Image 1 (spheres, helix red, strand yellow):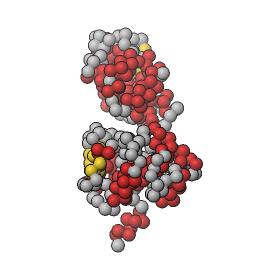
Image 2 (cartoon, one colour):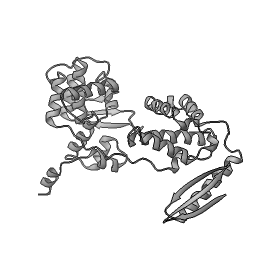
Image 3 (cartoon, one colour):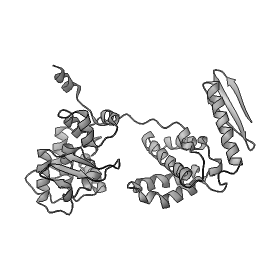
Image 4 (spheres, one colour):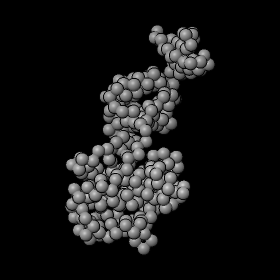
Length: 329
């Protein structure tokens, strides 16, 4: 049975479940009543046996890791996130008794250990598991991960590398434009310069093959990108010059780097050079901000591969206000 009572200016809904009470407080009586009705419906569905009684959330995750995760391009990171969930109390909850409160408790516990963007990514992965179990396996009828409040993300980054920082990184990597980049660290610096010219992601750079480059049209074709769509990236004269420099080394792929070694070497370069809070991915923001002075926002989205203009404008386009003031004159 459900009951609703007022405490001060708040309304508390109470639902009894197998001798235990579940309560939640709301700002309005209507919200409390809606939650109580939905909770009673969830309980009744479980009592009718629509959800297997002996399966835990951990069982769903382990099956998902075996059948679904290996098929994804981002399988490595998803594997790490799901194995972290398996170590929490949430993994031991019976699917037949799983409620939004269990997911919310997991969220609150995780927020005490890691930052909210990490928790948000893990919550998205949990929701994917539950969605698959509902739509493909028919083991659950609802996804309680959708019914809780997501952690607030950090403010969008606005960090851009300065000319001095770019110079210091190249200097530490022993890179100069007159020497074939035979060393890995030299190619990391060159990749950073190339990313600033093209707005390509680290993974896209590392996967670039010579057959993807059309020197006549000055275009790099990316068959598979982060959002699952292919795109063609226009190449500036500076980008073409960098590619010709790489041609001198006769590498199996354009950069002959993998994302992990690229990231590790770049972080080491920043640390040794005393450069703080700079990520390789910040080259993408620098590139798009530079390009925004030459092309309109729709063309900019085509170059970057953004299908949501708001993400492009809020996250990657970081113009200097003083430069914008000059444009007004």
